[in-house]
Length: 347
Ligand code: NAD
Ligand code: UFG
Image 1 (tube, rainbow, N blue to C red):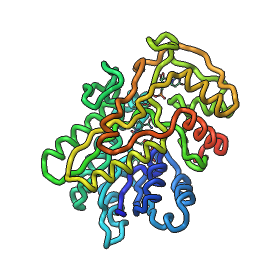
Image 2: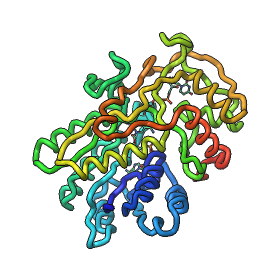
Image 3: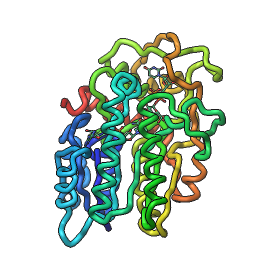
């Protein structure tokens, strides 16, 4: 059992991971400015974890770019148990928005990470799990994509993640003792099976899964399928969807390895290794929900690749972790969340 600091812990991936870590017996301090989430998510994490575990979660409202907020967060850990590790989810993640507002993306994602790392150094904590992304691979040359594939992001969001990965390289090389896992997520979707916590995008969803579930629940009329002429078996784009609970368990496994092994810098894909097309997702969601998902095939979206699928073997080898949930589980749990919370947390 360790004292952990989670930035962005109220968000989609952070909230599910916080639950898994509370259930594993850890003490958590979450720092979040709620710019893309609601405090209600953490209240529900506490409810799901039960009364004993709920007391092991402390919430600090603040910004990763603020040294004072970070000091306050480190100080929120009980005095006899300094922060053993940080899991850093806080960041901005919308590709299109990053093209329009690059300064904001570099500020939150890079400057925010730098500020956090400086605070970690000041507080003597050198263990970090960082949310990286398969977006780093750009248009991949080899699919399934190994971690050794070239880093060639194609938008400001991806550039900012690549810059943080570089910064972590430099930091690990600068002094011994850092234990760092850079986890490159593929396409996280779904929700906790209770339907109490899930993904709550604001406005029109950019991503396929929340869009499909909003069509199924009747909030939107139809899905636009971006491209029917990709070089894939059914002509629609292929991605490696990963259930958010599998992803949360991947964080727990990475943390266990970092805390148990000598200092190291780990770089791992977190994906299933299986690709599904947009039309596969539509059909699976219709089956899970019993609702039609009308769609229209339109032009390709700028910046999309035909197919991105993880080579997940290194994570299996290093973490002893692999995904356990398939597309039907992702749709069932995502639908359960969507149906019970048609307007998300209502924030
Ligand atoms: P999310 O937006 O749901 O969660 C991010 C959280 O960080 C939110 O609670 C938000 O309020 C908080 N936050 C943002 N800026 C902050 C700041 N300056 N200070 C404090 N808190 C701040 O996103 P998510 O899907 O849970 O993603 C988590 C991380 O994983 C992000 O870094 C994202 O880039 C990365 N990632 C996500 C995906 C994906 O498809 N969801 C894929 C690859 C990587
Ligand atoms: N798609 C549609 N219609 C939509 C939305 C998406 O057809 O309304 C298609 C896309 O063209 C693509 C697939 O569905 O073929 C998945 O698209 P998403 O937007 O859900 O996901 P991406 O793979 O484009 O990107 C996501 C995140 C990135 C992250 C990447 C890899 O948005 O931030 O996964 O982790 F980097």
